[in-house]
Amino acid sequence: MIFGVFYGFVLTLAAVYVPLLNKLLGTVPLKPAYWLLVFGVGIMAIVLTEIFKFAYFSKKDENEVIEKKVSAIIPAYNEETTVGQVVSTIKDHPLIDEIIVVDDGSYDRTNFKAEQAGAFVLRLNNNQGKGIAMSKGVSAAKNNIILFLDADIVGLNHEILSKMITAVTDNNYDMYVGITDRKLYLLNKLLLVTPILGEKEP
Image (tube, rainbow, N blue to C red):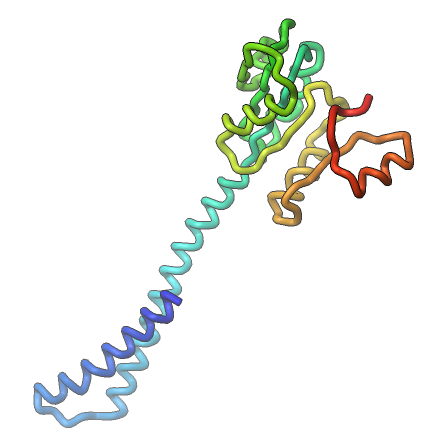
């Protein structure tokens, strides 16, 4: 809309300016030359508009790419044996530029193992539950897209991460939930129509 208004303004200016100039100078109006000038000014306006659009939207696209970076949040409670491996697996993924491990009042070396692997650790003074830990992680995150991972997940790799992340970053879904393979067929069917609550099944 802005570009259309700008283009119309330029054409109007040209249409008014040329006859006025002819009148002031006492020249004989040359209609073909007049419309040629108006046409030329219009083409110039279109070219300048396209240049502006290219510069503006290119910058906007760059900002969108930055916004599509992902913050990985890992709530952890006494997970010193596995949290380091989870962090190590995800830290080199190209779409993940922030890893936050929320140590939910662990009394083992969870925080040390997470920091050693390369994560930023947010420590809670006491065990407040997984939901609170996740919420604290979201508050500390710098990106709009959040990836939640369990601190004891096994079998994770970049291919699985990319499948989950791009489902959201490519605007195919607002949320993507990955569930470990379950043995109970009826439970799998039940999950299609009921919310997913609680901890990960062993």
